[in-house]
Image 1 (cartoon, helix red, strand yellow):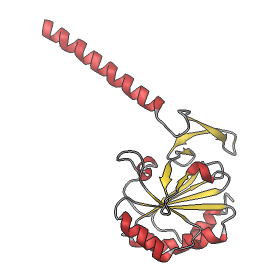
Image 2: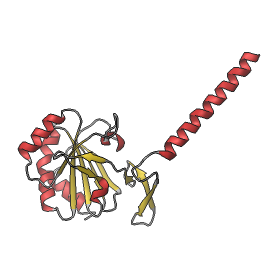
Image 3: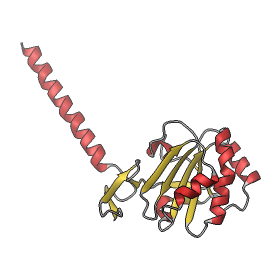
Length: 195
C-alpha cells in the first residue's frame, strides 16, 4: 500500500513539473520581441495579431546571415511587403522560380523586399549559384541558420518541402503561404493585394 501511495505522489509531482515547464516554455518563448507575445500592430479589421507562423499571425522575426556577410531581420523590412522564399540549389523547382522572383525584386524594389533563404543543406553550392547567376540582384540572399539546430524554416512551420513562399504585409503579418513554385504572374497577383 505504501508503494502505491509513493507512486501516486511521484506521478502527481512529475505531471505538475511537466505542466509548469510547458507553461513556462510557451509563455517565455523568445519571439525576438523581448518576450511580448502580443503583436504591435492591428489587422485591417481592427483585431490584434499575435506572433506565430500561420496566415494572420505576426511573423516571428529572426536575424539571418546574408550571403554577402551582413545580416537581415524581418524587422528590417517593415514598411514594405516582404516575400520570404525558402529555396535550395539542389531543388529544380526553386531554380525554376528564382528568375521570376528576381524580376519582381527589380520591378517592385520600392515597395517589396524579397529575402531568398537557402536551406542549410548544400549551402556552399547555393552561395556559388547565387554569385554566378544573381550578382547585383535586388533580392536579399540569406543562410537559413539560427541558434543551435533550429532553422527559420522550422520556426515558420516548414514541413520539409521546397520551395516555400511566405508573404508578409507592411506590418509583418503573414498574409500568404504556399509550397511549390510560383510564377511571375502568380506572385505579382498576390503582391498587388498588399502593395
